[in-house]
Image (cartoon, rainbow, N blue to C red; front, top):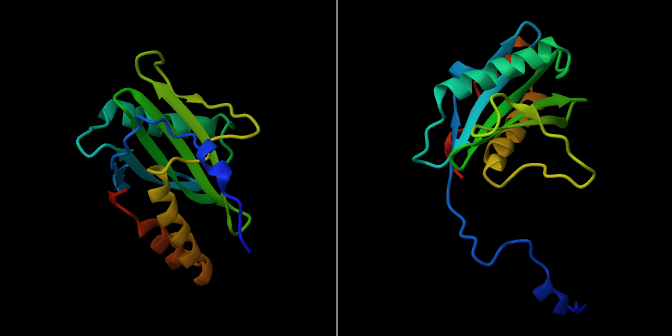
Length: 172
């Protein structure tokens, strides 16, 4: 079977002047969002030479705790992870992901433009929405594998601890 591929020249959402570059995914267990009835592992995504302001990181952690306490982020009884992505120098995504219904990853996305907003805000998304970028995908792919290992386990407290200890750091 031969496919007509003449339309490919018209298909692309990548700007001609875009040049891709690597970023780092860094697991930071000391910044996990640990709640009485939920646990999110903490990842940062950033350029290799970039540094997340510790005050903004702490604000992100506290923001997620406050969202849960206010009932805006309903993750009671769930395990998952948070991705704090420093995009450029001043824009931050904060993505809370949990595992639901055995094998589904659910997410809520927040953002902060440090030159315009003092706090994180929920990103309201439409019908065809951004899910995750190629750099954030590094953490997500690891978490998918870690969760699958958990699903094949006895899923007892020891397996939960093993899931929480199973982390990724590296270049993506």
